[in-house]
Structure formats: structure tokens, C-alpha cells
Length: 557
Ligand code: GLN
Image (cartoon, rainbow, N blue to C red):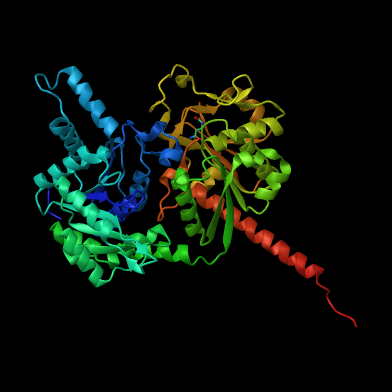
């Protein structure tokens, strides 16, 4: 493509929240990338927090961490999983971030003489940052969080209106994602919410170019015509975005609706047809695995909201695809495991593999430790991530190394702290963006399970934590068999642990789930699911043997 300037696709959402704008944006990126274009993304979030780092996962879902250590919206995870775009703190802007920048400039006197206002100062700041973050890409997909009609998203939408006008008709399009619900009582798909949502957009001054209509059944031609008539969007730009069983079906589903063709025509982009084969292979493997099912229990605290563990969920799906098996996930509330060993057995007895993910705060910690003990003692594949690794160290210290009251200083500062605050964290008072964040190098011990899984001894992974393995206990714990399989290059920080003589018992201080991709599944997850599959196969074989040995070999009358 010859264009020197970045073209924009602005994604907005109407009618309801959680309508899938993030996945739609990621899928558009995937389709354009499959056509050979360089894509990037910006997510504009209208809340006043500077970043989502201090929000509860119940409020916001997962906090996605980028290589450069930004705590960002989980949609950036979708963007990175669906494309090769590598994102940074510049790719997620919030109202808080914009106002913070403008107010600092005002204090420095950069607007001397002026009354600082939403228009033009806030909108100019948004526009400048969007341009800066997207420079160099062929196409930038800019998603505006929230729902059209929210008071708080108005400055972002006004900035988008201006950017679109300044870019010119063939350099910017507006894609509006709406809902066309099926009303059972009437036996009809209803277009009114979409009509209202587009009306709202037009009042702000943005005429949508494409409508992506979320629906559970295809839109008929007459429905599309009706939507077109009321929304001033050509009929062929009214697209059915049908619900899909697996989110990796979405790029192919939108391609089948000619979305990428239409966008390229509208943006005057000449590019090759997309190669959809890799996506088709992913979906095929996901929908028809040939090697059975692995039951994975994820023992955590934020179990009632799947978005809290979004990347983890996806990384396990990727690992299932790599192993050609189905991964059947159960989220277990760790607090429920605190009533005793019977409950642990009742809840986890059927699991082929147990995972303890990252987390903060004391609630449910003892339940997680019980789950880890169960996995260690019964030889069930175990994977501990961040807090999960820290608690695996606590469990080992208590039950193998005999340090009965061992704990993490996060939960009991008086106890022997096998996990302690990092020295550079001691003076930290502010909560926002002050953890150990982003990508750090790690060196793996040759011959360890970790090194074997990665097929390398030097890796880089993303972190988000304040506490770490306490080096005062290195000797006591390694003396009892704990393997420190990964450290920082200067050997000062323990980044990975594992146990020998166990099918798979691995913990890591970083978050590997953030780097797993459907087409590049993460090696630690692939090895974990493989170990689970081996266990599932062995358990099934044993049950078969027992059944056949109980059956009478011959019947004598
Ligand atoms: N709460 C722990 C810490 O801050 C673990 C963090 C996490 O699991 N992300 O170190």
C-alpha cells in the first residue's frame, strides 16, 4: 500500500455495553493484517481512573499488562492475541490520563493566557495522542469504550468527529456496533434500538459508515433495508455479526460478510485477499479436537466473572488447540476449599489438572494452599501463576520443609515470610502503577521442566506484583527439593520454581497468559495441558482395566 498517512477505523458501540466492540475491533485488525497491512490499535476509555490498575477485577475484568509495563484494558489483550501489533502505554488512553496531562500542562504555563476547556484543549490532547500512538501504521483501529449516549464519552467522540473530518472521507471510517435483538413474543428481530443508537451518533456529528449488527440470527435483506433507511447507512454496509461459538471464528465470519472488502473499498486501500487458512485451522482444531478432554480446575477468588481471567482462559484454550484436545474449565472459589480435606477431594477429585492464578488480598488464600497441597501430594499437574507460585512456595515451606507458620508477608507480616515485599517496594505509598510491571528477562536452569518447555534458557515475560520469593529461605527450601528453575539474569530474583518427581509442578512469578496467542500458544500452558491430558488418559485406562477385571471372565451355568 502506498499511503503514507495512517488511515483510521473508529469503533463505537450502541444499545448495550459488552456488545463485543473489542473483539470486533481485534477481528477487523486480523482481517486487515491477513491482507498484508500493518495495523495498530488505540482503546479510549472514558473513566477517570488514570489506568485500570487500581480497579477490582469485579469492576473491570482483567488488567492487561503490556511489555512496557502499562496496566491497561483487557481489550488490548484481544488486539495482541488477534494480530501481531505490539502495544504500549500509548495505546490505551483514559479520561484520567488525558486530564492529568492537560492539567500538568496548565500548571507549567503551557496555555498561558487561555481558559483551558474541554474543547479545544481536552480534544486536542486526545487527537495528538491518538496520532502519536498510531503513526507508522497503515491502519489504526481506534475503539471508544462505553456506549454512545454516555455523558462521559462525549469528549472522546468529539475528538473522533474532528479526526474523521481532518482525515478526509477515504482515510477514516466509523464502524458502529449495535444490537438487533430477537423478541420471542413478537417473533421478530427489532431494529428500533439500532435506529436510536445511530440517531445518537448523528446528533454528535458522526455518521456511521458501517453498522455491525450483533444478532443471534442472520439479518434478512428487508431488515437490512429498514436499518439502512433509518440510519442513512447503505444496505451493503449493514452487516450481520452473528454470535459465534468460539471467538476465533469471528474474523472468518466477518470476512464471509465481506467486511474487510467493504472497509478496504471505503478507505481506498488496494491489498491482496486475506489468507484465512490459519484462522480456519484454529477454529477446526477448537471445534473438533481428536484427543479427548482435559478437566482443568482454576482455583481463584474472582470466579464469578470470567472476564477477570480473560487471558488465562484464552491461554488454556490455545493450549487445548495445540494438544488437539478440549479443555473443560471449572472455576473453583478457593474460599469453599477452606472447610477441610473432604471438600478439597469433593471439589477437585475429578480434575486432571489444577491451576492457581494471580491474585491480591487474603481472602481464599488458605483454600488455594489446600488445593496446591492436594495437587502436589496426589501427583496432579499443577501450574501456579504469580500469587499461585508464591502460595506453592508457602505450601512447600509449611508441609515439606517443616516451617509450620510460613506465609507471605502480604497476609501475615509476623510469620516467617518465605514470600516478602521486594526491597524497592518498601517505601512505596502510592497504589497506582507502582508494582513491578512489564517485561523482564529471565534465565532458566538447563535441564529443568521450564527450559525443556520453552526450548530456550533465556526468556522474557510480563510481571505485575509487589512480593517475591525471599532469598533468606533459598537454602532451606532447595535443600528439601524445591527447584529454582528460573531467576532474573543477576540471579537475585526467583522467577520460576518446580518440583522433580511430579508429572508437572511449575510456578512462575510472571504472567505467561499475557503472551499466549491462538497461533503461538504459550509453552508453559501447552506443557501443563499435555500433562493433564496424560493424566486423563491414564485415569480412563485404569478405570477400563478395573471394569474389565471385575467383569466375570466366563460364566458357568
Ligand atoms: N499479590 C501478589 C503480589 O503482589 C501477587 C500478585 C499477582 O498475582 N499478580 O506480589
